[in-house]
Image (tube, rainbow, N blue to C red):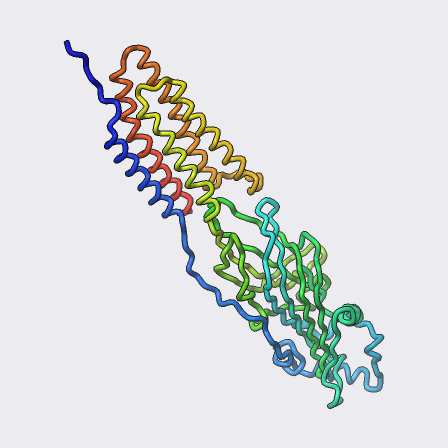
Length: 402
């Protein structure tokens, strides 16, 4: 009998198979990249006329001022020395217009769930105790240290960032007291805030950075914050290396605090970001998938020894483990599985299965079942790429559909 000649490697078939697999993987990678085309109109730094504010004195019923005039018809206040600790409206709520302009966002840290915000805050309220009938004196302006000293000696809303976790820096301060009684306070600041991150879809995730502001001393029966849309927005030249800003929302809420039975008026700004996945895509995901494809080359190594075949697979396994350590450094210790974790785990299992296949083929060769060993290799040439590609699609769909 003539010996059976088994064709171990078909160059054209192998090139064709790898081409199909690589094309499928590239198509899958492109499906990962989500483009968000929602544009938010960034506002330039507003030039504000405070007397037009809803909270300014000309817009408020001047019965408040008349009440003070009736109670103190002949008394003259020394405004340079006076300290006001009571709200200016003795009969009800004092409305305070609040505007927040985002200048810069930096140090976004998913591990500690923090970020640093630099911005401009603008407050306007009416205090009739500062009304002056003089036509010559329209307003008084206090800057920097003078503004800081003056604000301590008058009533103000005493606002605070309730999600503040780091140092708060006041860079510039300005206090303007108008003859009508309108008071406007402007401040440029830098603060580290806390905001929880949902990393389920990492590195194709979207995050919401929250800014929460309320009065520390006065509940909503005494101070009610109101959003001034003209003074709220973000810098049009703001650029984040790893993120795109795709939406910005502001709203007013009630916040119950332990220090009072009455809830507080809370200003909430939500800055919505979408991550730019380029770094992880080109530095981790694509090299990882290429590494998995290379590990399949053992299916065409029919005449090679077990050691040579397993060395390819072990190299791939060690590389996947190294990638896992790299990703873990940029993520907090979370209990749930992220999309990146799922891709790494799938790649690890696929490469580990090639080791099992190598052992099976080696045992078949030892038992002189070379024909069956080659048949197993040929089945795996198509089975492994197909299973890997299908599972990647299933994983991606399960994460993006949720």
